[in-house]
Image 1 (cartoon, rainbow, N blue to C red):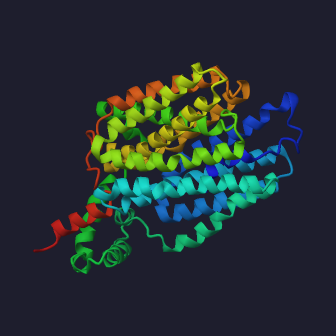
Image 2 (cartoon, rainbow, N blue to C red):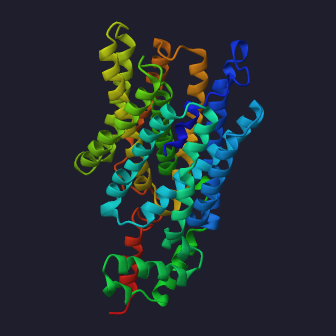
Length: 426
């Protein structure tokens, strides 16, 4: 439902007299929200590996729903800020675990499809959020309205399968076989189901147990991994800072804020479709670097365009928003393919929404000090995106596994099935 931008539409400031010298506290609320996002991305990395993707996803749903609804009943600024922190914390778990579960249940050939086309629901949620904000004027009612879809998400959780790879790595062989059989049945591949037996799955389990001791420290242990971690970290920060910077600046176009938010959400649909067509043709690295640098170019153009040419400024601004979304869509897929299987979880989570939290928080604070439409504010975003584009150009192409053991496709159900067939008696 586009909940990461819910704070854009909350206006409790007048109720708690956040005006004049206390006006900066409204930006501080956004910073606190993104700080929760950043801490959540680190915490859910551990929780997901310890308790499973599916269970952690349910906990994230419940946490986001409870604290989201509770925000609507806050009777003080301090309580509201604390509730927004935990809301951001919970929302991160939803995003992280949804992506990882999707990737671990599709084969490599369909990874682009599920990663890009599957995320179109994000755009739909954002467009609906603009309509809700327009129809619901009170911020408390808006908070409850935007949080309500999490109730449906909790109901659908019962049909979500656990990651077969996680089950095997934690000795739950029979449960993994159950889900793999269901997968084979759904895809009308009953012939594969008969070859998936407990003995061959146990051999994969024993092999997977070797990967249990890998931590965040493994991201910097070897020269290749240190370089990869540094470059992808710069890319994530550049992408998150520009995306959140543009998204938070809904007054910068000079249009109605509800219309601006709707346009910003709608432009993401063609952006995702464009990047889906380009990923397998042009390649991940060129798409990543190109979308980042073009986003920076759009920001730079708007710095020098006079305010009188507002029609042109609006077009360039919307184009920049679409390109920033294309860069964001690419980096999720790109990161999962760059890291080897054993380092993928800490690698993905280390810079997932933690980068968004850091950059979103800093952009909110900058927005409080600078006019959102000022050239200084645009220049700040433009300076952030350039290092990201340069780093993306130096990253390897997708599926490069560094010098850690493991292949990029082994964490998917397709990789598991291939290994089962290789181990099965002929």
